[in-house]
Image (cartoon, rainbow, N blue to C red; front, side, top):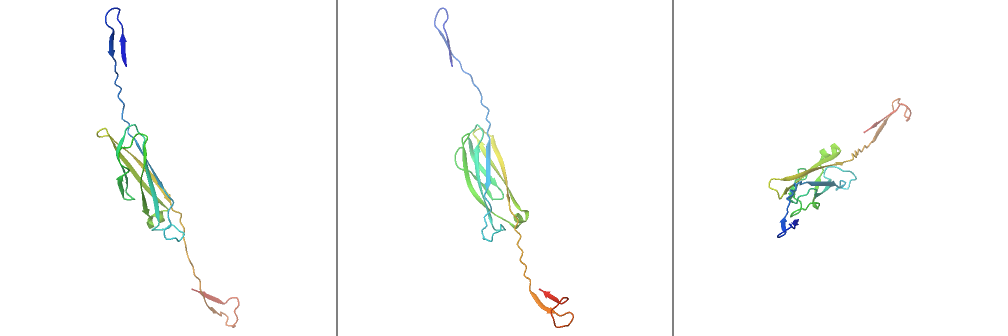
Length: 173
């Protein structure tokens, strides 16, 4: 902005006016983690140890500062890697590489898989970083499966009358 005035005599006065308004950096990043339904790899109709769960991740710059070095970490999935390359502008988002988890018997016994991930990012302001956590629980429906085979053995004629009648016994194995 510029201010100008004309005095009653002489040259007009012109004075540039400036205002410096500092803007506070408010970096923020949001991590969204999703899980697909478990995959029955062995085709037995049950989710059990050795089957898998596929996870996907996305990050969004929910702050007012451009983010750099966006990293996603997930210990259960063995991930500690960059999510995309280059800066992530405010309001921008990106999809990170997917990951697959192989179910353990302890997951099946627990009836669920609880998984946590974290994202961190640097800003152009020295020493200022931001981060977020995301957790998701994948239920595992128990499907107990028991097979019982009953085989009848020989009939024992309890009363000795050579007739199969009440009171005789039959042994099963």
